Amino acid sequence: MVAAKLDVAGAAPAYFRRARPLPSLFTVLALGYLALAVFWPHSIPYQSLGPLGFFTKYLVDHHHTLLHRGYWLAWLIHVGEALYAMVLCKYKGITNVRARLLWFLQTFVFGIASLSILIAYRPKRHKQT
Image 1: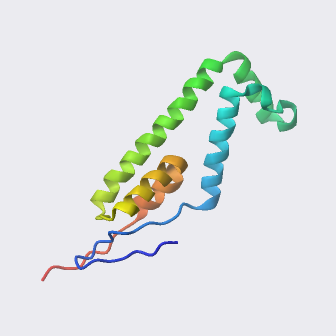
Image 2: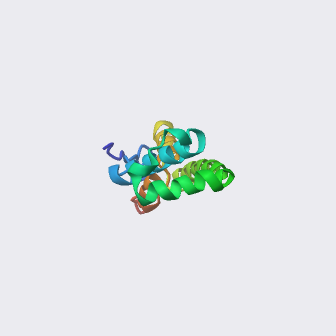
Image 3: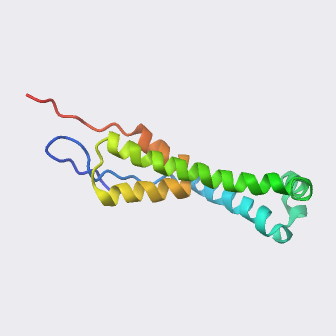
């Protein structure tokens, strides 16, 4: 993990933390599976996946438009989360361009698994005398 660097004012301009592995893995697998169902439905072994395969086959056969729109909606939500991460960086005093870019990219790919870490971050503020 990248450690926070404090400046004189007490803000953390280079604060960045990697997203937790399990939620990140779940996000990548879910988006990957959805992409397979939307763009390459013939490549999914439906019989081997039990109830998930049965449900996916039903959606592919009867509601492909819904799947397609849901796929793009999921990415649109990730874009919104990434943009919100930029707003949070500014609000929380993260001024380092590299740290902001890392937050944007990580939140775009992993969504709430990354954004929740940034939301929970409480920068230390020094008292003004």
